[in-house]
Image 1: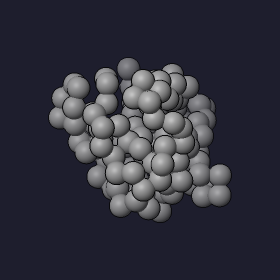
Image 2 (image 1 turned 30 degrees about the horizontal axis):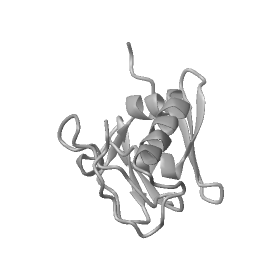
Image 3 (image 1 turned 60 degrees about the vertical axis):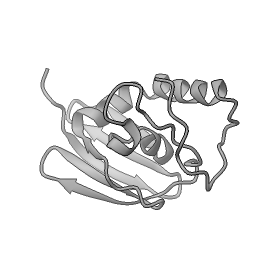
Length: 131
């Protein structure tokens, strides 16, 4: 499988969406919160299965900058100070393709922990994820 490459990346600050068009014609509008909650950083994902950190209070997060990293990724700089995740083209494509499923899994994890959505802003990421 070849890696798909974006032909266009646009930040829609008012609607808090990152619009990405790929070279196969697929177009995704990924909410900032969704991208923050699913950051590929070790801070969010941990260093192995079961070490994920559930991200809370991110429904108002804003992307301040989209910085290219070589020809394979972008670094998203969020207004909560998070900027350590490198979003490779394949990962962004996966996030677009599985957006509905991944978002439902996130909401299910919150519900299982008894956390109402939207989660309180100002809450530090903390509680370990459930996988």
